Length: 492
Image (tube, rainbow, N blue to C red; front, side, top):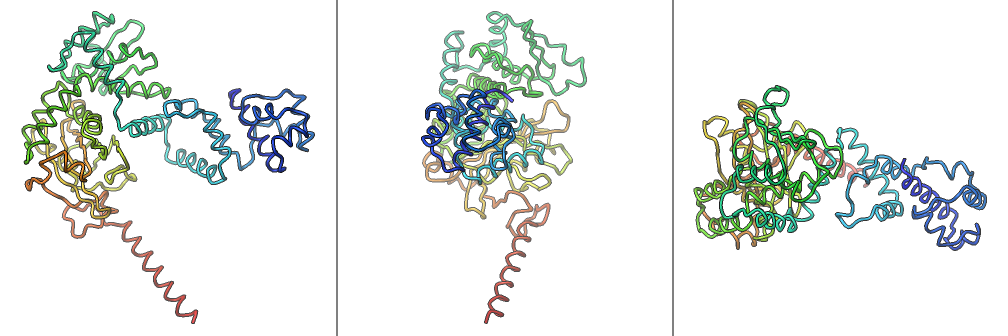
């Protein structure tokens, strides 16, 4: 264990022993002959006392010396020891959230036993569900995005500075040729396009960067939009002077949290460069001001940028909260294989709060009334490259309604595989003020649930499984009511 953590553990043990003996810091100072300020630094994990001072403390507190210096913690502090041993705190940049590691330890150390029980529970859940370090890192970045409404002004300004420095006109579509030229001429890159396809095992990789020679290897199958995005991410790493980074796209594994965070920063920068805020804001205003939905205008907006539909929807989650004050939204990405009845939620983001459509327990069946699912079913049966639709999703269970925009496209790297990308906006007074076409009667309103197993909608024509969780809850409630009646009957 690291030296800093050994200090923290000793400090926690000393504080626990002192409080158990009803001693104040002043009282322990008088008892041991050590200054109050010195003891305070020990308890806060700032200093580790020399053996003679530990001996003096052990003698005055009537505690064995070996117990004082042991790294083993009793059951009340054991979860904190597990947390320190896991080194999770070293991987998470707490300073991003305005938290010092010592502050967090102090909060946990001074909290009631319920907090320790909570930490133990989290550790057990992570173990039982094989919650990998990568999963933990990704969840942390997602929380970071949500805490900032997924908008980062410093990165937006960085894009403007980059465009000015390299004379890129953000009013025109940006091409891979524009960005590739900068990579080669300014940053000394070598671009290789015929190497990755020689290896069958690399069929899912779109790019590999070799840092020693600044060689960027590209898959032959990538289209113009994907190539542009890859180049934009590489430019982000260089322009933002990011060293701790990933070298493959998509990622294979993360070693540190900084790699995860920097991957997000580079992706955000790339999206903001290819889909500039000023331009997409103008296009969205044109769509929102109309009294009826202009589907053609929305699709034209997507096609205005040299970007995938997914990049466009991702960019909506940056721009809508900041420029239109629409902060109650969610983003979903589903994948689906043609002919299969399985739909996998691979990516989600919730701003403002946890909205109704979200990842659920493995094995449950997502609501087939979702436009996200319908788009996948439609495109898997057609020859189209892009399917678009929208609906108003009404959740009778919680009284929430969402305007959901959804696009489905083919997966270029997997035959007979498709993906859908959706953005849902909570329908409230703010949304009604910003989007005039909300009252368009042509937009279908659909009652939906989260999964079939938890859905209260009766006589659903596309239900995949019975509402077993609701049936179980109803049965338990009935049993509870009968027991109450029996108690009342035999208490008389």
